[in-house]
Image (tube, rainbow, N blue to C red; front, side, top):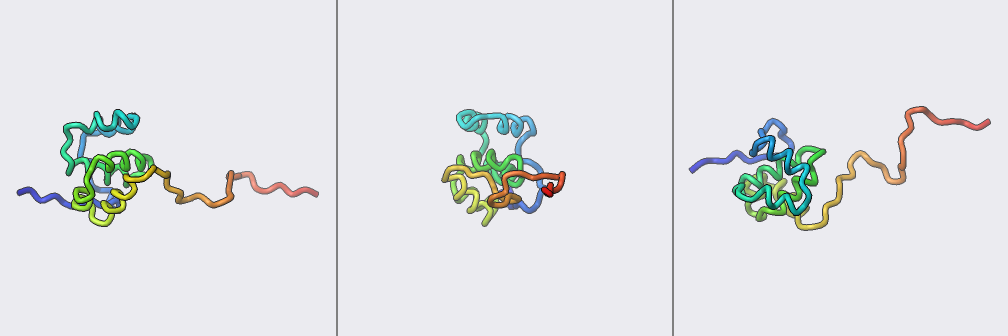
Length: 117
């Protein structure tokens, strides 16, 4: 029996569980093509991939799509509490993370404030 080391989004040193070409195709794929690209990849590997993708800010949504192809128990085995959270996220409509944004802030200006005399 092989022992799989659990993944965590807090540990970016883990290598991606699939070839970089597969990740590139997943990033470019629409929702329908995602299932086709994941066909033949074992569920445990898909769960690890979902966690790996979700742990990177530019591939959050892809990670959620991959997680949607996995059972909750498989995601929990792959990443514990993070797997639970990812399972929950994958079962509802995707909402982009809002960290780094402020309510009511519509733009950022680096030029300073103009004062009227």
